[in-house]
Image (spheres, rainbow, N blue to C red):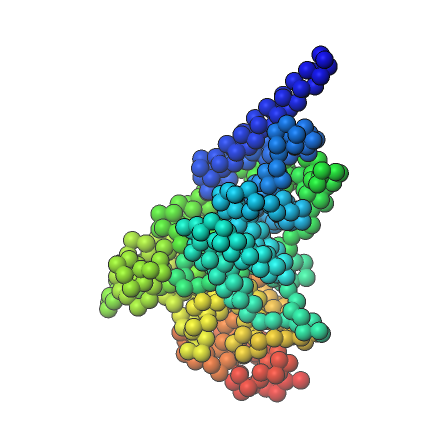
Length: 596
């Protein structure tokens, strides 16, 4: 009898310990979004570590004592799924904080396990609408992770499942938020459709999903020089285009640019919190014992005494339609976190704010700028206008707003119908500064598509061959043909890299072929070199394309790149003509030499 009482007491203590860990985990998780600033590096490290530690203990505890928790606590499968979902969210937010793509794989492992083990399969039978909402949110989060990992087949399966779940939720509860979930579904479908700008096909005509993150095979070659001193460390990606396809506060331009500025992720093989490790009974998941090995204090790839060691990817902030005050705060944070020899990149995809000043004297504020927090329902209302209006507006980023940040090396990409106003930013502080500006207009045939499906300029920076196919109305390409055409793009990039380096050598030795030193200093960084060379590709292609007439339909850069020695060099034009012939779209381009 005493022994039985002892067993019951032990079970009671186990249940109490589980309840304590569960409550502690919820408190810490909620504090991540409630108490911690979204900017800066040092403030959140310890808090994230404690949260991971508690969830590790919680997951391991429910795994080891599942039978007791089932019988004495009444632990349900959806509760296990909720814990796993929270861990998946932790990994995703850790990815957002650190920009390390390995965390996406970890988030995927947990989300995939929830689906594979059907943790939420009985949620509808609990007669709890809040539980169904948790299930729908899980699907939305899982879709975002799969989109970022380019698992498009799974994305389509998840969208189909989500649609069924929304229908079941609506029919069962007749909730007030059913229209909101219908909108979420339409956003996802529209985003998937817009993302597939050009289809690359297998021999059986099924589409192939290609990744456009940086890899050793796609990193442009470079003849190094002692002047290439800077590395990209901080990135601010801002999406404010008012009519562009989006999902989960991620516009199409943001989606493409963030991948362009990441290296190809590697599958995690050692993370003890991974779902793929320690599988043993009870739908077993990780026999976890510590927080993730990436990006924690003292480990490879994170900040140690204010210094960043061996980080695979630059740190990024993603801002969807921020207020001007939010934008400037995040810019200031990135500026503050820059280590010695680091560069800050600002990418902005936004609609223009226009000025009617006929004789501007202040290029910083009298030429207009970019709308940062444009709302669709305010286009014709009392708020900020997207197009064609003239004003000075509080929620507008003007070129003059960026002057203070040019105290440190800065690389700016502006994708807007008012991009050219940023070409006048002065270099008051003598620091390296490069500004790449999109065309301000596109031919009428493309206007409706690019407004919704994403900017043509950003597409060139993301996937040059996709962009060229798009403007030549090539909707699908067989994989063997795609690979052949990609060799021409690679040849172009290699030749352009050689010409940039040659310009600098000629300048030093002969005083000709001038290229601004800012380009040379940025050129040693793999990401910035890729962006510069893809900009050159965009400029040469649009210069030769028959449909893009007029200077406003071509990109600009400041400082200007040399024309004769680079942008109009015959060797680059020749490769574009060869590529056009390979795609059988030579008629889209101006007259040039016959191609082999």
